[in-house]
Amino acid sequence: MTVDALAQLPEGTPHRQSLLELLLHAANETEDWQLLERTARRLLELTGDPSWRWTVMGSLTNQDRIDEAFAELGNVELSAAPAEPDAVLAAQLIGRCSENHEGLRQLLVLASRWTESERAQATILSQLVLLSARVGVPDDFDQEHVDRAMAAFFERFPDSDLLRRIVVDRNEHSVREQLQDELFEQLERLRRLEAQLLPGIRAGTLPLGMLAAAFGKPLSEAYIRRAGGYLFAVAPDEATRRAEEEAALTAFGSPVVADLAAVHLLALLDDATVDVVLGAFASVALPEPARRDVSATVAAARLDTTGDTLGLDGGEVVVVPSPPGAVDHVAGMAQRMADPGGAPAARECSGLLHDGEAGRWSP
Image 1 (cartoon, rainbow, N blue to C red):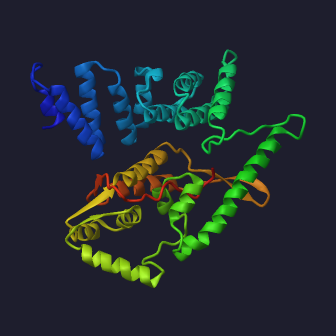
Image 2: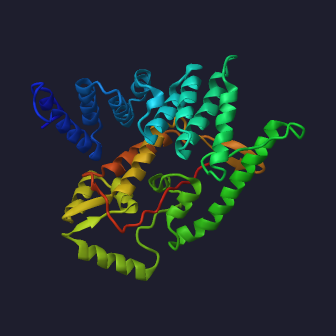
Image 3: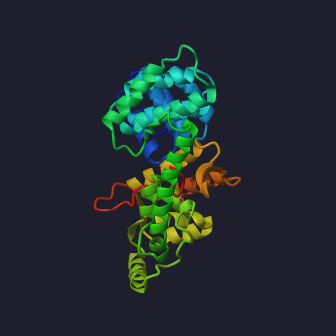
């Protein structure tokens, strides 16, 4: 039964709300964002519960309707964001779309609410700094509030990798030079770490996820951007290659679980070939952590306006322009990984290990 059919049921129909909520859950699991939006809007109309607007906002973002998602922020109470992902999404939308000082005040509201969440608070404070640099700071802006929020964050999360504090000494050389020095140190550290990991990754003795984790990016994005260099058609190690071939031959006609490397390979193939590959197995399941990893890459690409990063040119920190179409390519490939010609079912697969998060970009 679809949301349109449910909408025609009489007001007194038993369990109508429960049926809609089941439909919404199914739409979310299958990543049918249009159905999710329609169902959430119907639940909002039926119940009057404003929390459903957050679901509408998320579904609009996943449909790449960013401006509409940002417009929905005007209909929600920011301090009542029901979950951490909602607060993070709101901060990202404000940081990307706001063009005035109201966005700064909205971010302060979010910062006051999500003080215990490292991820949410780091995202909110980062967007606050970036937006203030873009739109300027009004005379009546509560800078002390920002300073207190920053101080509280570093007191609560002193070892955070999501947000780092740079202490500048105005009696030394210029603040700009001190920031340059700090960025240079971070980028140089990452460059050394990359140099240590890449030989093992290219030899097939280290997983790409190790490089991914070092840069704090989704593993699926690392595959798409070829962060480890060329992709192997087969395992470099002969024993591993034979074991993989035997496992594949044994699995024909049986249910199988795909990892991100396999799903990325499927995304590179044409639809007809994908149909042949998937048809060789009884079913193909994708672990839920892998599904979330791909979704994170899609969401990040949608909210990335330029794809530009920071890099090193000799002893200087420079902005590295993104190649034309790179952001769209990442988003498109990630979307295809989420639905590679047949959308392998997402399942909780106990006992399976996930490589974590990854990337090859500036911090």
